[in-house]
Length: 178
Image (cartoon, rainbow, N blue to C red):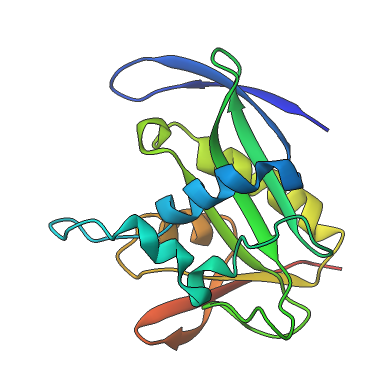
């Protein structure tokens, strides 16, 4: 299922349209870009080196994307036909226990939009699409977020609740009604 969305940008009144489609293994290179974008750095701090995504504890979110249990969606700008954002999750296993690990049956969520496309509702649309699909597959979904990250409010608006504070970072989960 592909959803088409028209979004009006804030102060710039710029209009952009995009579609949201399922992520496939062919999207792995873009997911690596989004993985880097998903790493929150507080204002005033230097950006993280791009090589950080190659560290095992971070790379595990994307390595060999498309394996059993992976679920994701990509936002594509229909004007340029280029990907502009993504949301994805991975079920934990022997190799993958992410920062937001809750239990073996709960997939861990990651998401990001390219900086020039933030603040236009793309993240909300991606998250809503993901949650629609995940609701039929899982009891809940989890994530880890920096307490200063503005995305924390997005997660809260979509029903995520803090279930634990781990190394100063909230681990949040959304439980699906059955």
